Image (cartoon, rainbow, N blue to C red; front, side, top):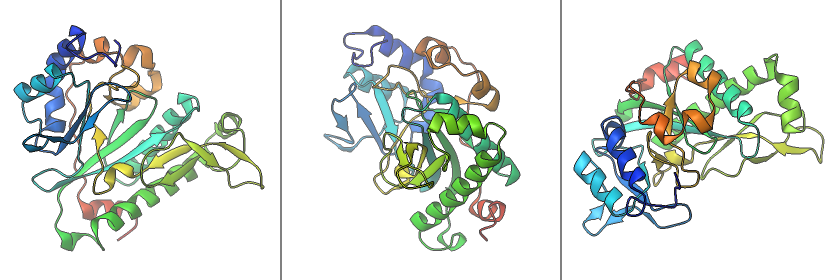
Length: 281
């Protein structure tokens, strides 16, 4: 499927979204949304009537009929429900590095008695999602951004420690081209994944960028089951067993994703449980 083509010229796009609407809408409904018409083309947050919302199958179909190929939403719902989200982006590194980082992240969550949903983004990156529900300001230290940033930092530190201790560390070093850190925490927009190691001066290499960019006030994240406008592959939730055997050309193809029967939800981690699990209380 060519992501540059819309439903106006490629009926497969409309057919795909009709087939995944029931699984996709729970991630999209009730949130400020955005749409995109192919790689490098217009990106719209607002319609003539105000901020875009896609709350049902009819509205989804209307946007696809207008030519939309990709859908995004705010991590803060109209109800006040807040998602925590991180993106793991390896740039030009082999996907095996991102895969291993995501698997270590799952282990960190298990050790902390937390749960999370991993979503392959359609372009080589993997995103972590969970919901706090509607946050009571008295339950979190400081403002929401500081609270989220401290959690992101704690997760990155724990993931890095596991990657350093992993038996695959030598192989990771060869992939990175240096023996410095495997990950780097970064706010703002996801970069191409270029980083500088912590080793001797002049050592450079790619790293897995752990980005908090979608948690900013204007942040948006690609919704699970949206097509990726740059690659034509689908954004899809992945389990641990999925990650072990994941091959993008097969498991993220629209034809494969539209046939998935399992329905995924964003798991709930209450703020107090997150602080306690990560030792930040």
